[in-house]
Image (cartoon, rainbow, N blue to C red; front, side):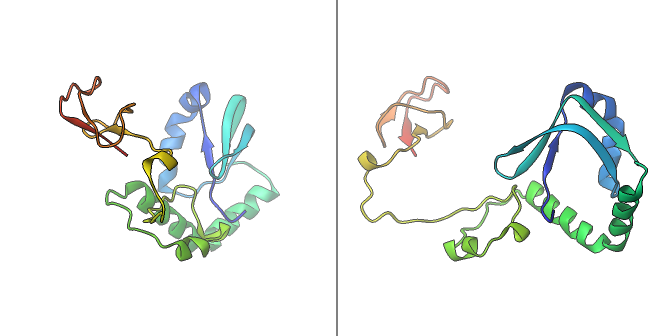
Length: 165
């Protein structure tokens, strides 16, 4: 499997292994995780269940092979880690991406955490033909006002709020 995926740990599983998990970002570890449920939504995700067990530093031929691979491929692991760090720590606005660039994306060079901004022009766009999320110009909460209407927002109490997409 050449793509990263997410393992979500919940409740007692997380509390039981919290100290061990906090040390993992400093190194590449081989672990065994048993009894997870899989989901395919915006990438592949595994979630813990009441039966989930985490085996740190497992024994066996496959675990040894994975450790050897990690030792021999540190550059790949470091590249993956830095790419994730870049995605998660990005505080700047994502630049506008061209459709051609998105079309070149494949499973091997796309991360489920990536977000893209597109600039599109709809040739015959009108508010009646679009489903827009209209929100308060101050707090962003949803409103039933028509587009560009000035109103008093019931959430942030701004009297001169404007409904905008």
